Figure 1 (cartoon, one colour):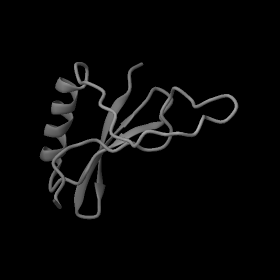
Figure 2 (spheres, rainbow, N blue to C red):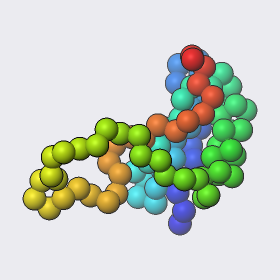
Figure 3 (cartoon, rainbow, N blue to C red):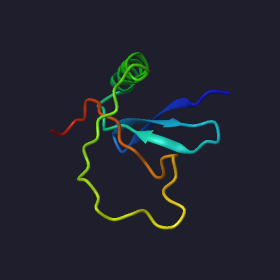
Figure 4 (cartoon, rainbow, N blue to C red):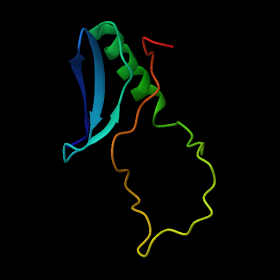
Length: 87
């Protein structure tokens, strides 16, 4: 089973989230004024994600990871770029 996109209300606006097979939230979008905007952003993510480049934007770390290192799998929520209401 593949992950899925879920559109949901957040106050009077809408967001979408991408969940994995284990129902873990992998990504959460910005706000959209309506469901159609959220759905359009989902289609854009689906079209662009497979060929998207990974770009490192964090500051370089000088500290070594703790014993055992870091997990390869993301933890917590990751925000997706979209068309947020508030610039």
